[in-house]
Length: 232
Image (cartoon, one colour):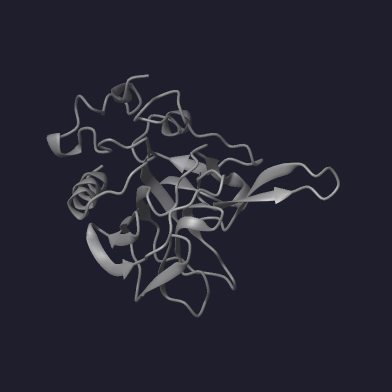
């Protein structure tokens, strides 16, 4: 389906020029804010019909066109089916409903893959800040707020500005998909030996839009995409 059909006539044709094709060359892009329906919000705008979002874990997130997706439980996470190369791929995500009240030992992930390639907020009561994960986590201390957060390869950004965090880790794929509204783990059923995907750490805030790239975005690209996403 052409993206302009998914947003009550608002899409690549009628959006202001700054917002047309806001996802650039993303391999997958999803827009919950302003979507015509929950079903429309799950369509991959970068390539409709390929890597559209699914809800295989048992529940669905709540959705409305103003607040986007909200995840009442870890099993309401959305599965992208994308298997990233951690340390090379990039993601840009717009969040609202912040700050939120964390609970003890709370992982609250906007997205994530096996505990890697993840952005989470206020994981623990003693931690006030945004946590970015390539393979290991780094924390940007201080208050977090509504805005656009990004991981680009091995750099972290907020509202298009470099957070001053960097990694030097060997790129690696862990064979687990990216999920939105939580992070994914691959587990083994003890009785059957079957491997299965399980989500953890539900987002306790709103996810409005998100895009994934199978390469490392430059700082200028992060700034441009972040600004376009903020304008949606």
